[in-house]
Length: 387
Image: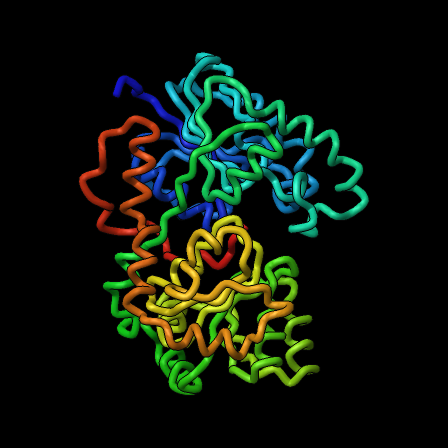
């Protein structure tokens, strides 16, 4: 292709996260591209790339995403660098990026994790429900619509998000689902990497249990996971940490729910928990849901809400069960999931592989098809700190 100087744009870089898995894939496909972001909270990540941060990175605002939000569009409207095209990973304002030293008509390939939930769908994300958020929302919505302009091509990470893009920005987007390391998950013997303490934890778990993992925040639906344990009596192992942990522990104690909280876990322990569990639980309204794909790749069927990205990942009655957890017979659903063929479950996960993602992104931006995936991963596989 004629382009010689690409740039990769990302909101901010975290140690873990589903968006960072996409960024990792982009950097693998464009190894010579600079990465520009608002700030980088994972300094050892992407060590082989040049990572440029905005002036916000050198202020206290980087610690509070909501307080920094009014300043973010300004940062994106004045990005230095001379580039031929931009590959943009956005879930807030990164798609606003303007490169004042580059051709204003340069190609921009915009990969959308979601139009900002704080602004457009606060009912799905309480971070946008406060008085300040409500007051700023009309202005931020106008700014966000103006940000989609120029010579652009837009891709959504799910049909669910493509529908939201149409409703909010008035744009049509094709769909390329995010990558999951399906091959690595399937082929790795995770027990070889367990510590003694991790092996003892696994040995102490019951033969039948459900598993859930993620950042423990209110909008992720972990209160429903605890309710599942209370209503069914099925033991649940819950991995992850976050501000809702104390409330979830109190809920479990109050209801007598058999929930084991294991905190943040290593990749080895996480994938062993996926594989040994009878079913994976995800009751969040996900834009996509990479943890659900990881569960399927481990051979474990998922029980999830019949809404959002889960409906694109799970083939109901084949690789998992879709439901309304408020009204469903959860015990019956668990039994249905437990009876599913685990080979068919893994086969479903292969549809969302990293290899497939590389091929589809390469075709989108005009790269030659990749010969193969990278042999090594620069960072762990964990995706529990999802946006």
